[in-house]
Image (cartoon, rainbow, N blue to C red):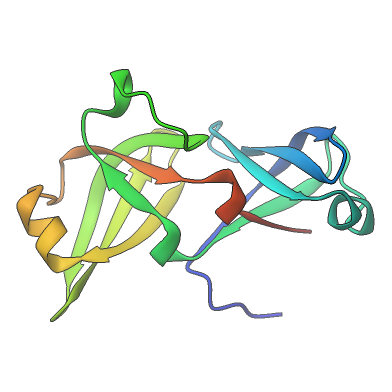
Length: 140
């Protein structure tokens, strides 16, 4: 299967915590970072998610925010992944920002060109890729 989402991050299921309706799934990425996803219990069951099972955290680039100085920030997004900008591709309206995490995994964000320029997001700048857990899909 091919998929249009730019971020298909490989890893292993670390934990699955079920609630009344939804499950919180933590995936340890190949580089060591973790990504949290909130999916329905029925989806977790149909994927047979269990600790140790290989899985993918899937995120559209348009669902990834880029922030600076996030180490001390308090925000509700569960996934704040520090890294360094590896590449920026500017378009007429949007820019595509490639963030390389410490473990080598790359996360692509599609943000407005104006935001990219106002924040000075250029290769080498330290940033965090920010993703709400509800915006993470899980694949096996």
